[in-house]
Length: 379
Image (cartoon, rainbow, N blue to C red; front, side, top):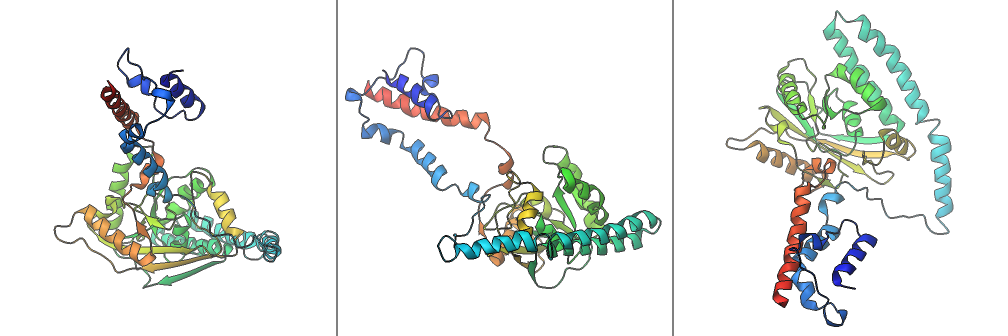
C-alpha cells in the first residue's frame, strides 16, 4: 500500500480533523514510500514547526484553561475519611438543603419579596422616586436571601460605593452570583447578557426596576444600542451606580482575560472591584456552556458554604494621553493583583466562536507546503 493510502486509512480511522495532504498536491503527484517503510528523522524534523505548534496547543493551551473548572485534590478516598464524607453528603442534601439555610430560606425570601414588590411596582407608578427607592431596597433584600441560601460567607473590604453621576464600577467575572453578592450591598444597575428561561423573566421584570441593561451577543446592532444606553445612564443624577463585567464572560477565578474597552470610553471615573472565591467548600465558577444556572445554584445550595472576598478599590481616571485600551489594562492589573489572578492576553468572546474556515485552510496549506518541500528535496 502506498503512503497516500496509509494516510487515508489513518485519517478515516483515527482523526477526521487531520488535513488530507493529497488534496493540496499538484495533479498527478503522489507520495512515495520510504525504503523499508521506515520513517526517517529528517522527515520528522522537516515538519517540526507544525508539530511544535500542535504540541504547544495541546500542552499549554492558556485560553482553554481560563474556562475549566479546577476541582481541588480529593481528600476522602481512604478508609478513615470516606465514611465521614458520606455522612457529610447526607447532611448537606437531606438536612441543610431542604430545611434550614437552603430551600426554606429562599422560599420565604421570595414570598416576602413578591408580596412587597408587586404592590409597590403597580400602585406607586405616579411616585417614581419613592417607587425606585423601595424597589432598590427590595432587590437588595432578595439578593441577601440568595446569599443566605448558600450560607454565603462574604467579606467586604473598602468603603461601600455611593451613588454619584459619571462613575462606573468594573469587576472580574466568575459567575452570575457575582452580581448577587455585590447587589446585596448596593443596588447596582448591571449590564449583562440576556438569558432564557426563568433568569430571563427576572431580568425583564424585576431587575429592570434597578436600571439594568441587557445585550445579546448574537445581535450585531446590539453594541451600538448598549453603548448609547451606557452613556445615558452614567449621566443620570438619580440612576443606580453602573456595574460592568468587562471580561464579557465567566472566567474560572484563576485568570483574567482582556477587558472590553467600551467601559473605559465613557469619560467617567472607573471604580475597580476585585472578587475572589475560596474553593474550600465549592467552586463558584459557572460554565454556562455545560451547565444551566439552575443546576449551578443547586450545586451552591448543596455545598457547605460559599466563601468569598470582595475588595472595593481606589477609583481610577483616565490619564492624559492614555488610550481606552491602556486604561482598561491598567485597571485589569489592579484587579488581578488584588485578587491574586493571572492575566492572559485573550479575548473572552473567543469562547463563543469557532476558528474561521480560512484560518483552518491556511494551517492545512502550510502543512502541505512543508511536505511538498520535502518531496522536492528527495527528487
